[in-house]
Length: 91
Image (cartoon, rainbow, N blue to C red; front, side, top):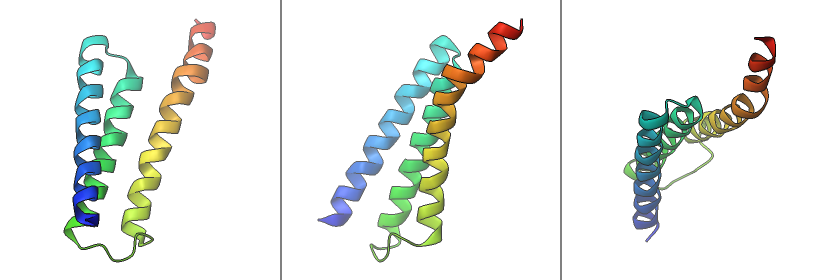
């Protein structure tokens, strides 16, 4: 049952990544590209976790990929709301 749920989470993350990639293609907004990368990493992370067998989720590989994914989302939000406004004011 756990493998099935991990597969569903991986598939959902991959679908979200593809949707954000399509939004980026239409708007060329960096927020969507970074979200697509983050959800793509999450999809790969869950797929690797399911493929290698559900043992310990705290292994550095899984934890590191998830950390990078969440940091990408945080950076995308900060880039859109803070850094971009600073760049606009500097012009």
